[in-house]
Amino acid sequence: MNAVSALAPLVVALSLAAGAPGTAHAEPGTLDGKQFQGVFLERGKTSGDADTLTFRDGRFRSSACDRYGYSDAPYKSVAQGDATAFEAETESAKYGKMVWKGVVRDGKLDATVMWLRQGKPPVENWVVAGSKP
Image (cartoon, rainbow, N blue to C red; front, side, top):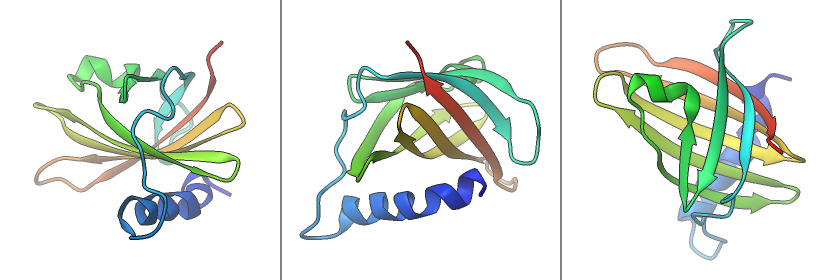
């Protein structure tokens, strides 16, 4: 099972919870204080950039994206059984937007990151990371 198919049910649940009346709403900050170390790679590639993902004060940051001018951004999350699904959108004035949708379960973070640039096709990226001690 690839990262995308593994994330699909929780990403759908997060989207529904964020907007469906009568359900639990996604909330900012539930992953605050957590940090994960892993790799950011383009879909289909076997290597990528080292990445530290940080959740702090209701905001999300990817260290691999710092050098491209991406800053931290607010994130939302929702608990789904033994996992927490999250979403964030980071932006760079020069390189466009990164749309993050991921899941944290048992100290492991798996995310799909869509890189969106005006006039160019979207590029799908994956992040796999473990809890940083």
